[in-house]
Length: 418
Image (cartoon, rainbow, N blue to C red):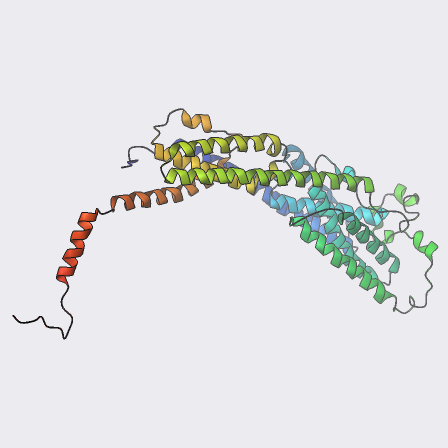
């Protein structure tokens, strides 16, 4: 019989440490989310003021202040790609849209990543900002069409088309960027429909298309003259031919594509390696249920070797890949180790310390493993109850005879008289 009432299954000190770290992480996440919401509101207001040509010095000052706060936060609290809080990611995207929108109206080109700060932004954040800017340009082209500004609409359509052409080289799979990329197709179609409808407008339908005039067009600079410095307005070299030159840097986007593909290949290797870890951990739990403790221990040791190799070779350089398959594999492994320890009635010797790896497992993985262990303990308890309730053949035969003796004869049947 198994008797575990004399010892604690999980150390209370470990539980307190995990709770303290989780509360600290939650506090950091809440502060970052609150900062992100406040900054997003300022950047959104700046974008709306550009749309309605109502940019005032007060709005510009608020935008610059929010920009400094965001850059300061990103400098003081750097995070690996894919690990930022959602609220802060939204603020970064709104910031990129605002800066890129104003830069496009001045120059007719996109704002490169190096102009903003390549060390502060992640690749996916920059691409999400450019995609969001395409949506803003589709709305901006609608407002320009109400003033029969065909040249501005054409320039917006050209920008969106070039962004779509570059993004067609990416394999986004089912990532969040995939839905944003699908939205660019609709934005391009919206601009094309606007240009088609403008071709029937009075005054434009009979106007002959002048290619030289279009190439020398400067994009809506008069609508936000306060955003352009005197030096930039006096120099027309950057705006000499916005429709004939490319609005994107092909080399920069090629670097983004190569980095994205390398990260995707790394992700596939992590998923493949985690399958072996999960399989070994599940087999260890099944072996422990059958009472084969030595086989369970061997499987757990094999899973530990594989998970540490994945951590050192792949996860250490890309912490965002920790979420998903790798985290699920750690939970399965934690469940197997905790359940096996519970079965072996370990009195807290050094075996636990040998298997602990703080660099591999975090509090979320341990918490998930503890929850999974509860299910394994329930299954083990049911197995023990079934063992104790097994009835020997002799007792079972006596019970059957007693039950047959108590059965009454059916109605209408009478025993024969002697």
